[in-house]
Amino acid sequence: MSRVAYVNGRYMPHGEAAVHIEDRGYQFADGVYEVVLVQDGAMVDEMPHLDRLDRSLRELRIAPPMDRAPLRLVMRELVRRNRIRTGLIYMQVTRGVARRDHPFPENAVPAFVMTAKRIALPNVETVENGVKVVTIRDIRWERCDIKTVALLPNVLGKQHARENGAYEAWQVDDAGNVTEGTSTNAWIVSNAGELITRNADQGILNGITRLTLLKLAAREGLTFVERPFSVEEAKTAREAFISSATSFVTPVTQIDDTVIGNGKAGSLGLKLRDTYLAYAGGEGRTP
Image (tube, rainbow, N blue to C red; front, side, top):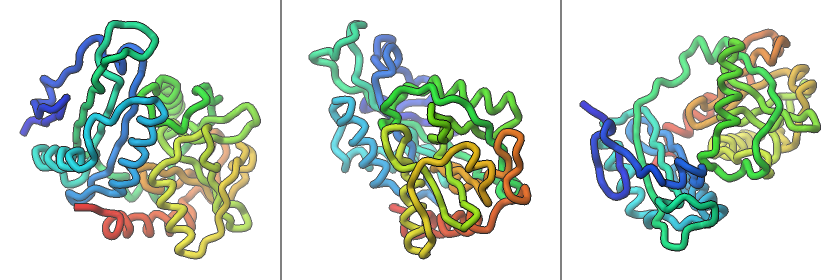
């Protein structure tokens, strides 16, 4: 069955879906996006993702393309039409189509696109052996808390990781502290057993999976702190891992040329992964 996309009020074959050449997302990266995990046909952390979409739109002063109730109906219809059991919904809102000029156009109507696709989740071997990350200088703008479509630095970083045999690149600020991965949040576990992730300032995207993991860590009685950590602290940590809507909790067992711990997934990371999977399969789902 061919994929189906939703473009500005119409369902259409994915291969025929298109936007205007003067869409400001294409010409200025003047837009935002959101990604929602679908597991067993249900949305995971749906409402927090939609809350973040609303926040991103407000920060860029883009009007919502529709109210939340019809938006949720479109999400479910797209999942149904694409027969998604395990996959992703991608939605993108731009300021719309207008004559190319830098200032906001006066009468542009926001453009709204949504797609859905199946995905394969990380396999057992990847989880048990962990993944390698490399460190790179963070060259992004100063509002990384907005989930915009301006992702070129992230693309370059991810490509650098791939070319160096790594799964992800951890971006590093001018103070030598890790901000986040190119598409993930970064975590370490200190030798004292303290769970550490950077505080949600304008230097990182406040990941929905990140927020859920903090909630679950508090529920489990784990000791955690939100603060910056340096590359050197990460390399001497007991454990490290990354989180996102698609990687869940994926252990990191090598940073640059340094092996973390014993080179295998750590116990705390694995516990959090299991806890998150139980959440995603239960209370975190909306049908």
